[in-house]
Amino acid sequence: MALVRLLCYLRLLPVAVLSFTSITSYDIRCHHGRVPAFRAANDDESSFSESLSFVSGLQNRVNKIVEADELDTVMSSKDAIVELPVVTLDALLPNQKLQGTTTDPTFCNFLCKLGLGGSFVMTSINNRQRRIRRFGVVAKIELVDVDANSDSNNNFCPTSVTFCIAGSKRRCEILGPKERMKTRIGRWRRSYDPDGEESRLGWGLESFVDSAKEVPNSDNTEDCSESSDTKWTNSRVRIIDDDEEDANASAEAVAKATQIVPLIEQWIALASNQLTYDNVDVVARTRRKSGQPGLTVDAAALLRRVQREIGQRPPPELPTALALWGSALINPLPALGVATELRGAVLEAEGATNKLAILERGLIKSINNLNVSRPLNM
Image (cartoon, rainbow, N blue to C red; front, side):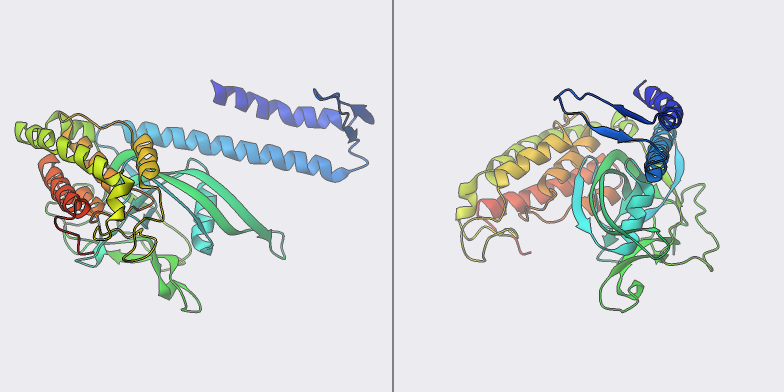
C-alpha cells in the first residue's frame, strides 16, 4: 500500500512542479516559524531541472523496489531457478551482515547499479581446491552510501561506497556441469588492476568445485568473448528450500541437533565473558597485542548484536536451520577470531546431518580453545 501511495505521489509531482512555475512568488510558513522564500522558475531555471531529476530518481527507486519484490516472489516458488550476478567475496550465511567501505571502481559501480534492495549471489573460494564453491547465499544490499564526482562529460562517477550487504534466508546453488564447470563471475584478482598493483574486482571465467551429482537445467554457458572484465553477467542459480530439507529431517539429525544445543550454550558463555580473554593462552585473532590480555572488540556486545541479526536459535526439530545459525554465531561478522572457519564447508555440506557434524567439530575445537584445554592452531 505504501508503494502504491508513493507511485501516486510520483505521478502527481511533475504536475505540481509545473504548476509552481506559473507562480511569480510565494511563501510557505514552516512549523518552526521560519519563512523560506521560493523563487519563480524564470528566476532560477535550474530549480525546475533539479525537481525533474529528483522525480526521476524517485521513479528509478520505485522501479527497483518493484523488481526486488518480483524477484522475491519468484524465489519463493518451489524449485525456483533465477538469473543473478555472482560475486566471490565471503562465505556469507543467512541473516549475516557484511559491512564496509570500498573504493574499488568496479565494485562501486556494481553496488550503485544494483541499488538499495538489489540482489546478487555471494559465494567464496574453497581454499583446499583453489576453486569457487557452487553454493552460496542470495545477498541483498541494505545500505549504499555513495561519494562521487562527475567526469568531463558530467557523468556520475562513484569514488567510494559504504555498504551493508545482508545474507537473505535463501541459500542457492550456482548451476553448471557436474565436472570441470566454468562460468563467468566476479572475483578480486591482481590481473584486473591496470597497474597490476592490487587486487580488483573483475569479471571472467572461473573454475568451480566438482559436484557429487548432476543438476538438471544446469547450462550456464554464454558467449563471453566480447565482454569487458568490468561488465557483469548473470548466472543461473537454483534456490534451495531449507524448510523442505528440515521437513524431511531424519531422527538422527534431530538427535544430533539436540546434543549440539548445550555446546552452543557453553560456547556463548565462554566467548561472551571478558575474563576468558585475560588468559593469554586463549587464541584470538582480535587480541590487542599478541601475548597480552584483552581484545580489540567487546566480545559480549558483538555476540549480542550478532544474535539480534541472525534471530532466535532454531529448535533441534529444524536441524538445517540450527546448523546454519550456529555457524553464523561462532563465525560472526565482524570476526571474533576464536573458532575455525566453518561457513563455506557448511554451505557445501549435503544434508542436515553433515552440516551438524561440521558445526559440532567447530564448537568443540573453539570451546577447547576458550577454556585453554587445547588452544587453536590458527
